[in-house]
Length: 428
Ligand SMILES: *[C@@H]1O[C@H](CO)[C@@H](O)[C@H](O)[C@H]1NC(C)=O
Ligand SMILES: *[C@@H]1O[C@H](CO)[C@@H](O)[C@H](O)[C@H]1NC(C)=O
Ligand SMILES: *[C@@H]1O[C@H](CO)[C@@H](O)[C@H](O)[C@H]1NC(C)=O
Ligand SMILES: *[C@@H]1O[C@H](CO)[C@@H](O)[C@H](O)[C@H]1NC(C)=O
Ligand SMILES: *[C@@H]1O[C@H](CO)[C@@H](O)[C@H](O)[C@H]1NC(C)=O
Image 1 (cartoon, rainbow, N blue to C red):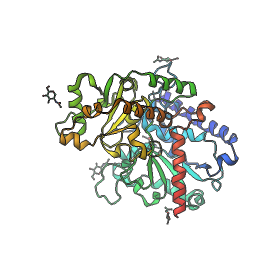
Image 2: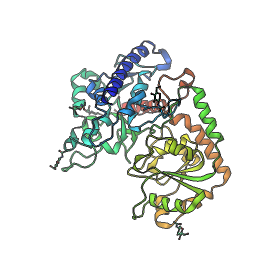
Image 3: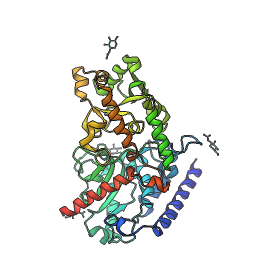
Image 4: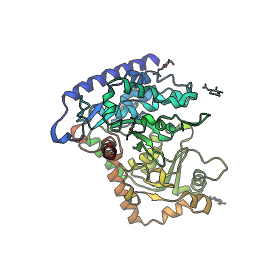
């Protein structure tokens, strides 16, 4: 195991370097890139590749090595699969890094750049603080990076005092938001609380209720097409799919006796027989096995997205990918999160909102509420969901030129990042 993955990592490093060279020489120029230049900051390998080499050694976690394959997409689900991978969303940092290397407007010159990308695998580096052995020094997460940025070519940071820098963090922002003043450590590192990093933009899987640095981007799903026909054939399959189940919930929890939304869903769904389907994802059995939940989602009109440990779920994006209309129980689950990809002002056009208090404390029945939505409205919502699919998925790196013209989750995240950075620079 260890040997094989050491090799995988070495191959990855080589491919990263090679593709960086190839793409740099092929960078397009002129108007297309105006105000869109990005400089990739060169960081010592302890901030990225070394963290991959340690993939089997993180305490309290399963072996992460299999998820590094295919530049963070993970292993294919089957040998003959073209587009489906066992993707772990925490590999967002790798997936972004790989895609950034083929971004068409890269520049070696930081002065010409409109944004500076820090290829730092912040979430992977956080593991030693989150799960030990450095649990008690989680206020130091990021200090070493900041020191490096001040010592090595400090003029790059100084030019805009970090306001033009961005980083990808493949976890909820909550995991990086422990107040510095806390005496006894609680969950999380303090990366986003460090004054040193107030000025940067962070792309996270979930933002806080009142985000300052961060903006949320979609969780990676398991579908990563590499050309237009592969995307098209999936879209056709989604459109043609017969939806004989009213609602699906793919998840775990809801087994305790205290009232909460997951428990309400479970009891209602267990009683409902044909209208509702529970896909048991307890103990993480679904995480790297998309077939378990994609099939039922393809057969359902609505996919229930209750909050769990945190308000957001990867399942929201699996559902959209399956053409299944998401049902939210609080606004923090998506509406106040993914504005770059799921426009906040149009939320009612492609999703259903049922306040969790109504269900848990006032006896509102979810399935009744969904049943009452007129069929033409359901069809309209589903059409909007179909339109959203290409923009919430992360296509495969090195894809066909035709597919590259369709903006995916990465492209929209970069556009959003530029807007955020521009507004920060304007406010200086
Ligand atoms: C990788 O793991 C080794 C041993 O567990 C540790 O000494 C080293 O600091 C780790 N490297 C990184 C970059 O975390
Ligand atoms: C996939 O193919 C490789 C060699 O081509 C083989 O070693 C492996 O067992 C296959 N895996 C599965 C799941 O069929
Ligand atoms: C953290 O500090 C607490 C209290 O001082 C101690 O009991 C615990 O063992 C420490 N944890 C680690 C991982 O060092
Ligand atoms: C962040 O920006 C402010 C100005 O907006 C500046 O005063 C401060 O020094 C910057 N912080 C760092 C760490 O560069
Ligand atoms: C489930 O069904 C049983 C028996 O039909 C009924 O007593 C119970 O109230 C139902 N529970 C819910 C949550 O509908």
